[in-house]
Image 1 (cartoon, rainbow, N blue to C red):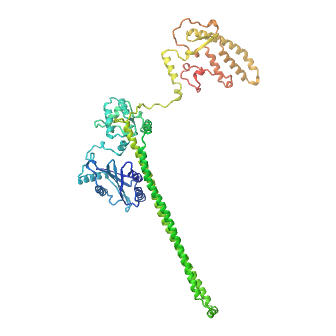
Image 2: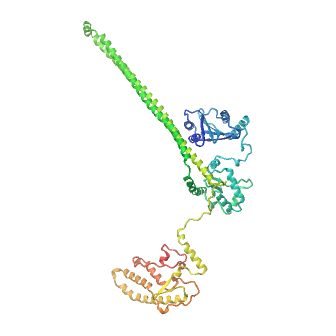
Image 3: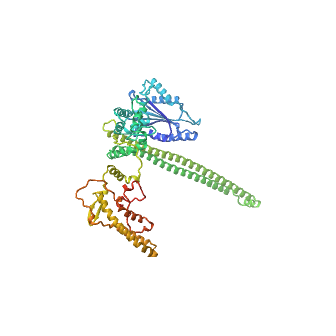
Length: 636
């Protein structure tokens, strides 16, 4: 047999697990001792209350599961109880509260035994040192006495790496792959990979993501399970430091995603696949499970309704009983009073005796005596009535308390049933998901591929650099190779209605624009010197602001309306060799535009004619930046 034991808390969750009818074909609560409640949830709640009130123990339960080897036959109930008695004696749990539950799962019967570790008389928890070693010793003695063979892995000196833990069992339940299958697949990928990138690619094809966590290299599979990479390579000759040295060349730990990031990555990849598979799921099994749960719930609800009806009947019966008792008491008092009055009336003297009684005062004394006795009788009646009322009130309190406890038990049963149903639905979902994942593998011994590409973590975004990344790259490209810039080739000049491309000779362009700019500058200088004095002398109320605005407007208009004489326009008869063209900011004409732009930036020109500001090109101003984010094409 295979015993598995642990000290634990969470009695309600354990009771729900033990009563799960979806994972088990048969569930039987064979024994429950040391508890007032007759169900597991109530018993475990009592043991928890005792633990918290008497001690500070957190893990107040000791849970043991006994799984026999099917190859050697099933164990009888007496053999199970014999094994439980041996474990109690070895662990010092003799006489402690205990629950014994039998399950049949997939044709295999096994047993669960749960003890309370709290000794109520001593007011302390029973310590369990070396409990696993004691269990192994008891198991070996039991196997020897009953002629059973120990299963693989329970001999002395076995390989601990091949033993499955509860976490690995849960992984197998989620993925449908055993630990041996995962180790075999990853070991094969390690042996056939000649480079770190090939190994990581093989892991992705098998549904694993290489990540980093508390250890440098861990694997997160498609279903969110995490394992250390060295533990999944089934080759004792390979050391952990060799694996790290092999992977650090291309995948250092700081470049890998964390475990949480990897889980989020595979969850997004897995969600779409499972949603599609879930949409075509057959609902018959779920309907059958819900029908069984509804039938079980109907029984519990019927029992609860019967209990409530019984409570109402008991309350009504008690009220009738109390009313009858009060009426009987009052009737007895009235009957006694009537009899006394009749006796007094029969004994009342008449004639001479009555006259003598009145004369002598005997009748007066007798009447006083009768009133005194009537008062005593009434006080006794009131006292007896008060005692009866108190007795009835106590009976009602007892009945209400009993009803309250029964209602609490019924409500606990309903809550426990809801927990069991939720656990059964979860088990159904896990079983369906496992079956679907097995079908998705399509006969392969590994999970579906992830098709991911692991890359080092990138830098954070820099918006002011990302905005001009393509222009900056193009400028360096053409500057390094001596080519003309594609953006600057679009500049043309209009001369007397004719369009002249600036793709010709550099000297011709300089001659044309230089001559025209020189004449226009001389003409503008003469006009400026002639009109400056009048501008300073006139329109005194404007303070010169209006004059300066008009001057800037005229200068901008003149800069835009430069005319080039027709005889100075160069004529290109044949294509000239391609040479780096001068930018327009390098020509003499640019000085006029710069002056206009500077005048626009002055405080007095904020309400000017609306002329646009002209800035030099990026090649002319280099890496110089300013706070203006206007588009370069629009400015040019």
